[in-house]
Length: 85
Image (cartoon, rainbow, N blue to C red):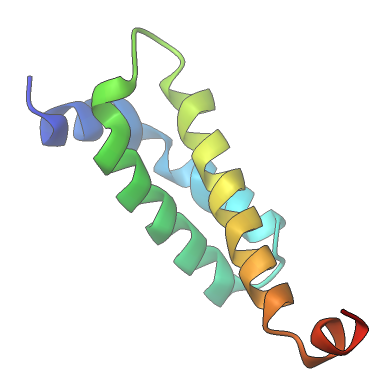
């Protein structure tokens, strides 16, 4: 089975849950859309490493990590944070 097929079968059914989680985490719809898009790209890239069940938990973990990476990137660009360091 190709990675695209695995992605469609294992990850896409959980896209609504990912969108809900992403909207809840940053509380910003635009950021949430970007986070889900980043998570989908990562999930597609690594779907071959997904073994057996647990696709929902696996994908939502990627969403949380994408959100964290985005938040850390925004914090690193903050002038206030640069002034403190």
